[in-house]
Image 1 (cartoon, one colour):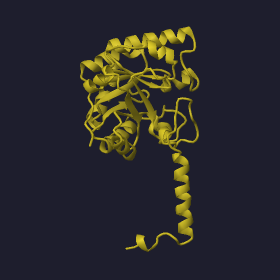
Image 2 (cartoon, rainbow, N blue to C red; image 1 turned 120 degrees about the horizontal axis):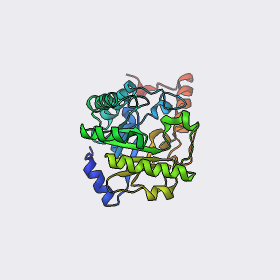
Image 3 (cartoon, rainbow, N blue to C red; image 1 turned 90 degrees about the horizontal axis):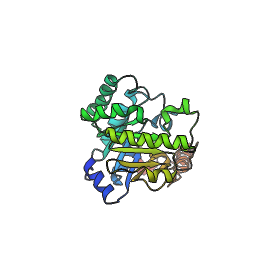
Length: 265
């Protein structure tokens, strides 16, 4: 069992210049492994739409989906600080609906905070959520829920206009009370500029200057074989290991090797 970090302790790590680790997980077993590895924070990300459901993007993930997966994650890692993604159209329609949906996440999954994609436009919502006691992690730069308007998965901050928009987004969400901000697919030089004592910065494809890093569990262990963004580092070729294990199982069953005497009651 690990000692669960709080927002206060996460800020203490930031102040002491200790890097913060975050892993995006969607199930009991991956969460359990992360807790045993003493990963600082977990994110129940809407990336589960791609790595768990097999979709081409995150847009089809529902509120019920993330609640279901977040409950499993909490059972696997009850002592790890956990943030849950608010899925597409679960917070965009109105303040009232957003607060109710964020409240459901906190109440039903025992999450510690919610994550909201988008910058300045959502600053008023972040402020309201803070006032009702719901901590918010913001997400700026490349925002996957805007895939249909952005057009494709891509690096952000190439132009002066994009860089300025990202700076304004960061300033707005931090002033609104976001305790943490995820930067996705932006230049390292820009990440270095986006600093505040009021917010913890977590990067994914945003260089090494952020307060911490996040990757998806399935990317870390190499289970995703169909895409590999530049920012992903695979620490294991899990796909190949699993494939060989299954081939061996199939072969042993077909040849009558399994079950052997040691596996029979």
